[in-house]
Length: 143
Image (cartoon, rainbow, N blue to C red):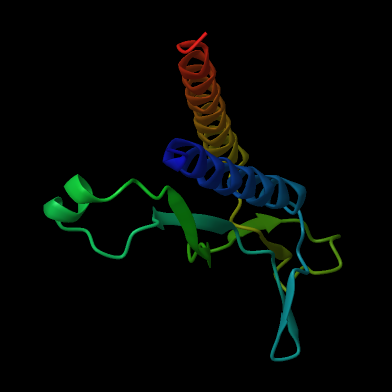
């Protein structure tokens, strides 16, 4: 009876985490000292959220017999694309040639991810409200 609520709640939680990760990426778009590796600072590396269905059995029969369980966050992964090199000889992290490694965060891509997460969040709020209204109308049948 409440599976629709549970599926919407899990999706809302997952989309909120996606928005938090995008916000973190945007906040660190210029961070050249994100992680200390072997005594050297590495720039901030972009993070991505991976979502999976909340069910372990993915057969067609299981989908017919079970209620939908929503989604869960399976991992927060780091983007392995190379860092950008920018010529800034006055920067404290510049190498001997004057180039600075900048994070692999593309603000345009982050905005597209943020818009997708926002739209998905809004769609799940709409589905949650529809489920709530259907239950309320069901209660009015007996009156």
